[in-house]
Length: 482
Ligand code: NAP
Ligand code: MG
Image (cartoon, rainbow, N blue to C red; front, side, top):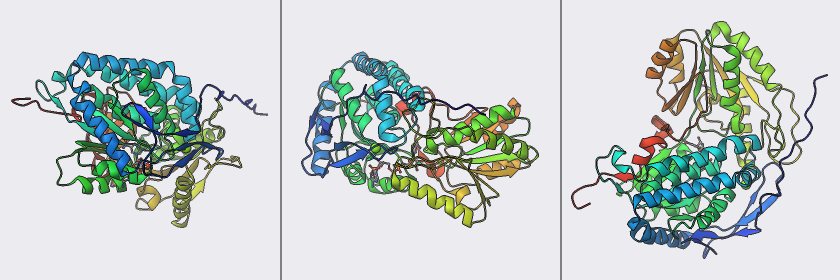
């Protein structure tokens, strides 16, 4: 008899969720003037967590004005090292309140507490620590001496890594001397609102960070606001294109971090057990709601059976269920809409002739769930091999030679990330030089570090976040009279 795990739920008593939240503008929570409040739920239970304000155009305008005042006022006059101190302070408070943030993230998003606790929150703190160090060293950002901030940044983030995406956006913007208006995703606003409290706790000057909650229309109002100098967006390629059209012909700068359909490539000389762990982490981490997920597995033909056998065995051991349980590997799908999309594309996969497989897996009665799923025998041009499913669904393809692996890996409109598993260093370098992907991981997958730039080619967007490059995206060259 295989043993089972007793429930090990993390207590939610640590987090105090308010019944309703206002918008965070000019350092204070204020009521929205023209939107209709909406509810955010826990996707694992469909329980309503809180009511959240919807920012309409006049609220977005108030937030941008508050950011502008802070930019031309107190934040703009502050010595760079002093800006750095605020960022260090925020980083430390994020660490101090890590458990609270992790529990809230898992409740609002549905991701396993093991991931929010061990990945999302620590990496978010690491981003603030890292960019805090840059605040007084902007001369070394690669833009010559005395580079200048851009001004007010409008930042829009998705629901898959709510706090982490917030930190990717806010930390470099503030380090460079900008002020921000950030819009979290409609389904996951709560950690951004807790972050607003952290800004108050850190005594951050009012208006430096403003948080406007709402859905797509709020994001659009922010993008189109004439006094926004820079748009930083993470989300779907479709919305990214709409944003690019909306700001074309304006002086607004932009970085767009969009979708992906990454190839995870396993050669026959790879350590297979390690590769299987990497494949699982590549696509089942965060329920596959990861832009850089290794959603296309490319296996060298002569190890196909061995890899697939191990992979199936390993999938049989994944535990799906309560996101707050410390033993959970796979949490809830973030929303009913996302679940419908995953189901639809999986059905398309079957109707296109691919074979679908999932381990025996009991799904909870309430909430949104999808079992870990493999597709084999899919055609290269099939929709499940081309389109981003953004769920726990892996499409398996094969190759014979390195050249074929490169050709198949690059055969997608996207170019965000890729993985290579082989014991030959020379082959890693050969592959990395030919893969059209912003990030190439070797013998690992889904590793994130604030010092390392991240971003895409082709329909995965442009611009980089993280590292010096991510800082430079919030700066312009200093000129005469600067
Ligand atoms: P999405 O629909 O594009 O939404 C992203 C954000 O944009 C949300 O806050 C959304 O608001 C907002 N938005 C929607 N329409 C808008 C508009 N017309 N103007 C301005 N903002 C608008 O994407 P999603 O479904 O939430 O996220 C999944 C996608 O994000 C995937 O394709 C994934 O690959 C991509 N992603 C990319 C990265 C990366 O770094 N490259 C990272 C994470 C995710 P509401 O959701 O509140 O309506
Ligand atoms: Mg939610």
